[in-house]
Length: 313
Image 1: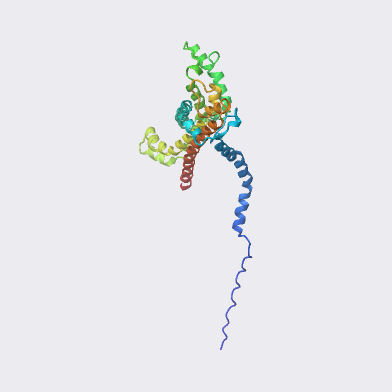
Image 2 (image 1 turned 90 degrees about the vertical axis):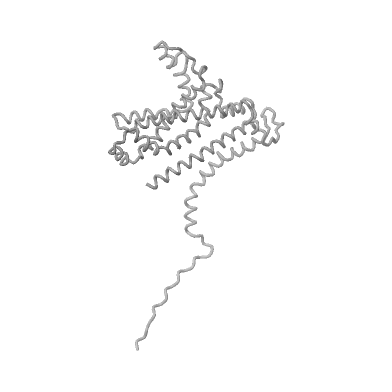
């Protein structure tokens, strides 16, 4: 008889030591730890001041009478929404934002379509068109105020004088249009860059197939290019709105908020630094932040959808 031998049983793996954290948790903390200083800095710099502003917005607090400070509830918010001057500033903010965003998008789309074509000197033209967006906002407003809009030595009146035209005082006769023009000049390159990125991400094989089928340039733009650019148009409109809703530099530099150009951020400045109404100014500032957060939420959704579309290709 032959003896049947069975192989020795495999040794069981050693049990993990009690209380020893898993390696995945260590790796997670190792990747997050370098971000903690930045997170703490962001909370201290942004969130704590906002919490303080939120608390002050519920107080009836005039800095000229610090001892008369008292809790006012939502009365500051009610005054922001019912005061005629503040409501006028809200309407001015809406008009300013919508006008600048729409005109910048249209001009940016035209410039993006131009730069999407190949021609000699395209790089130089692109650099020159981007330059206005790189100018400091206050410097850009001063440029428009003194170099272009000045009624005595400004470029616009100089050209009109050369052709025998009128010599208007731009800032006093059309103040809101002057502020809008300076912002459009500065934000058109931003819209152009976003839309140019969208144009360069098109499926060129699809466009060539449409040309072979006899589609005209207008039909290609209407049925292929414009639907493809919808997300990029939305993104440009939302990001531009976030900034222009909070714009202060152009209004302060060009008109000092006069002649019906005071938007909500400038009204907050007036309420805080001139009227010394800390609670009322804080309430108006909180409303501006809430509006910006709402717009930013839609912007983040558009950005996320763009990333998903690029990944799915």
